[in-house]
Length: 121
Picture (spheres, helix red, strand yellow):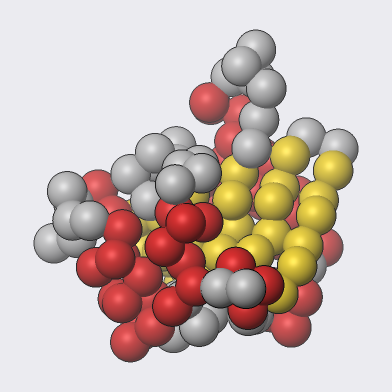
């Protein structure tokens, strides 16, 4: 799968997902650093990438996202350094068909998903 990781996603997630064979770009390592969410969504649409973020606010503007959104939600006590393992576990079980066109909320021990089209309703 092809992913774009937001600035708020632990950088180690890049190498962990690449080790699984995914095509991953991290906003911090690109010209997208500091760009608004709308620009990141546009990039994902143009480059066919699933957007991975911890930012709840992205869901407010994600109605124009065509590819997919993975929203990482963890409790405050959850160490950010554990997010790469959480993502790796999820992507090892999920297929692109499970994610494409959907907003998927990934939390420790729980995953929820619904079509992105419900965000514009």
